[in-house]
Length: 125
Image (cartoon, rainbow, N blue to C red; front, side, top):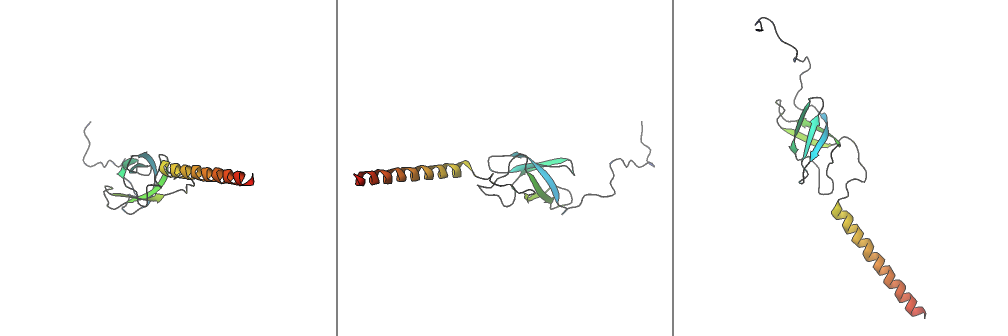
């Protein structure tokens, strides 16, 4: 069926077009080894990434399922910026390296305690 030129197809039209600079809530859908993330923005219905989010460090990376805030720098939705987490996460950013360092410190302290106890026992006899 041929479309008539005098009839406007407005099925995908919007009276509230999306604008650059608007802040969106997005869900992290993937995280790569360098900490870059992919996000899905439900309000747009698209997934973007990989993106390097602002404010992340080796000890504070995002995980799949995290909710973040982001926006676009252009009206074509090509350049995305992820600002940060939309929800506060507590005690989830300890990396394996940090955990191993803490574990080694505890082991060293336990050895020092055992040594001091041994010295006390030898002096008390």
